Length: 500
Ligand code: BGC
Image 1 (cartoon, rainbow, N blue to C red):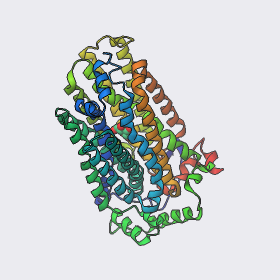
Image 2 (image 1 turned 180 degrees about the vertical axis):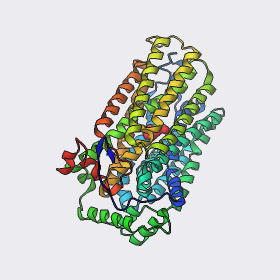
Image 3 (image 1 turned 60 degrees about the vertical axis):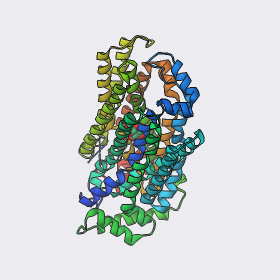
């Protein structure tokens, strides 16, 4: 078995035979719907914060300023107050994701998803009925808590329930539902933007994805590993039967899970301390680097910039929205490509291919913008070139959709041993949110000053992360979670840490 170009020989575990059953497919689809709330919020908040009635009511100063804004396509929406409002969710989510590691260990993955869904639902209701900025911010904080909990618990849930051989495919479901949330929200904004109370509807309707995922989570059982860890051994066996099939022989897998849990219990140390031990250095580095790199691919910047660009070439707000929907659909389709190949060609292949593709597209966009709109961005880009930029952005979104999008949720959820798995995933979500926060606070100013150079900045990061993956990320496809230590032991660099 190839592991990052280095071989892991021989059987890795006796319990790797999980088949794909209807039950495991349904369970994982239901669990993955948790991604809907995160995606819905990403899609909705961008649109709502450009709706005039919303700005007039809550941010009148921003509204006035937007009217007088400099007509430069790089500087149209530069407002710190508004971005602070949008990104307050990420700060709340960051705090919640750290708490979530305790919660998932104590009450299970499934229950954490339920709590996340209910918190998000409350936030959506408050936002939909908001009468003042305080309500708006309170709602946003609750939404943040909600996604903090669900983004922590769901990827771990999926990785623990999926048959090891198809873990990658099952895990991509989470990113797929994030993508669906984004597209649905964009379409909804299109309709609501035309009404004065439309923003209420957009914000309030977040209760729908929240209800869908909460009800879904109530219908599924917790993961066998989590149940064993919490001493519910019989329920764990039932849960394993449920996902592997009534007539399967689950005893070997069950024994492996039990053994892993017993070993974890023996070392009764604080997980947030354990994770800093030398032997977990590779795991820790990945749980920080992977989500950080995901954000510095510039995905959210491209998603934000595509409609702005289209509006600035005079194609109107409808075509701006169409640009966003096209990008969203391309992204969705490409996640499905990832589902199909992630367990066949592996994570590393997708990271490399996606990285090279994204790099080329970002450089292409930067060059095209520099050549057509001039160094300061004052010249108008022609419609033909704008479409070419959109094509490049679509290719970029496809590259992201089959690499850094889904894999940034998958890798942190599959590399940790059970005792620090929730902690590792928490750190990963916290890093993702912290980076999103910093980038969203700074990128409008950056775009306004660096102009097309912004895209070169992100392409440099993409080059760096692709090299990082080539050198340091071992291949994890097909390896059962409880045998994952092997990939580090065989790795040319990390072996010195895990063997130490
Ligand atoms: C990222 C988000 C991004 C989304 C796009 C997620 O994996 O964490 O920042 O907006 O993908 O679909």
